[in-house]
Image 1 (cartoon, helix red, strand yellow):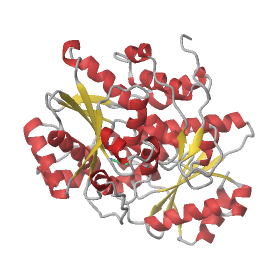
Image 2 (cartoon, helix red, strand yellow):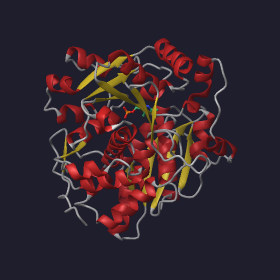
Image 3 (spheres, rainbow, N blue to C red):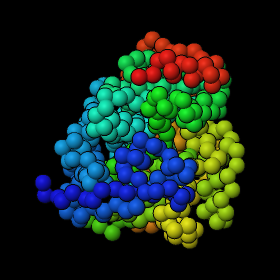
Length: 457
Ligand SMILES: *Cc1c(COP(=O)(O)O)cnc(C)c1O
C-alpha cells in the first residue's frame, strides 16, 4: 500500500451536548443522543498525488480512493475496497453505463448524471454504501444478530433504501408508505423486491408513517427486544459517500477538456437542494481538496435556504407542493451541518455558496427550452440547477450541475411540458412487471408494534 491509513474518524453532534462518537456508533445510531446531527471532527485532505491519479479512473475506483481517505482509519483497506466494489461496480445491465456519468449540455455546462443506479435517482449512491457499511459493522459485532431498518417514505427514499439494502445479510428493511399516496412506479420499486425487504402499506398519511417510526425508536420494550435503526438522509453513512461523485465529476472534466483549456478554469457546482445533504457533501469534498471554486444551491419555491443566503435570517416554514417534489422541504435538516462547517458565519457561507429559486412555470420553461435548443432532457430537479448556472455563471467559469433523477421518473410532468412521449428505461419497466407484495397495516402504533414483535429478526 502506498498510502498510510488516515486516523480514525471522530464525530461530534451539531447540538454540542453528546459525547464524541466513533464511525460505528454514528452509523448505527443515525441521530446523536442530543438530537443533533453527527459531523466528522476532521477529514484528511487528499494528497496531490491521489488527486492527480483520479482522471482516467472508473467511478468505483475514485470512490475507493476517496473512501480510503475518509474511512481508512476505521475499516481495513481490503474490506473497504470490497464494500465499495459491491456498492458501485455495477454497470447498468441494460446500457452498460456506470452509475455516474458527465455529459456536455452546452460548451460550458455539463450534467453530472447521478441517475444510472437501480432506482434512477442519486439517493442510490448513498443508500448502497450505507447498506454495506451497516452490514460490515453487524458482521463485526459477530453476535449473529439482525438489524431492523425502519424507513418511512413518501416515495423516492423508500425505493433507494430498499434497493440499496436488497440482499445485504443481517439486515431486514421495513418500508412504511402511505396507502394510495405514492405513484405506481415508486410503489413498484419497493413492493416487488422480496428477500429482506418488507413493504408496509399504512392506512394513513406520510406523516403517520413518520410518526410510527419515531414512536418505535422511543418504545423501550421494542428496543430491548429488537435492534432498530433508521436509514434516513441524516445518517453519516448516506451523506459522506455523496462526496465520491464530486471527485468523479472533476476527473471526468479533466478527461474531457484539453489541459490548456482546463488550466485557469473555475469550476462551479450547481446542486438542486432540498434537505441540503447533497450540497453539504460537496462542501466537505472541497475541504478535502476538490478543485471547486464555488457552489450554487438551487431551490424550487421552497426557498428557505435562498432567503437565508440573501438576508442572513433562517426562517423555516411549511413546505409547498411543486413539480420538483423531492425538494419540497421547509426546514432543511442539513442546514445545521453547513452552519457548523462555516462556524455559524453567514459571511463565510456566502463566500462559497450562492442561491437561486424557481417557480414551477420557470422550471417548465427551462425543461422546454433546453430540450428544444440542446436536445438534452432535464428532470424538474436538475432543471433548477441547470438554470441557476445559465443565470449565474461568470466569465472563465465552467459549470457542472447535478442531475439527480432520470426524467422518466416524472414522466407525466415532463411529457406535458415538451409535448412528446418520454421513453421508460428498461430498468423501470422491469419493476413495473414485478408483482406487488405488501403488508397492510392501520396507522395505530399498537398494530405496528405487534407486527414488529411478531416478524422482526
Ligand atoms: C432528494 C432529492 C433532492 C434533494 O437532495 P438534498 O440532499 O435533500 O438536498 C434533489 N433531487 C432529487 C431527485 C431528490 O430525490
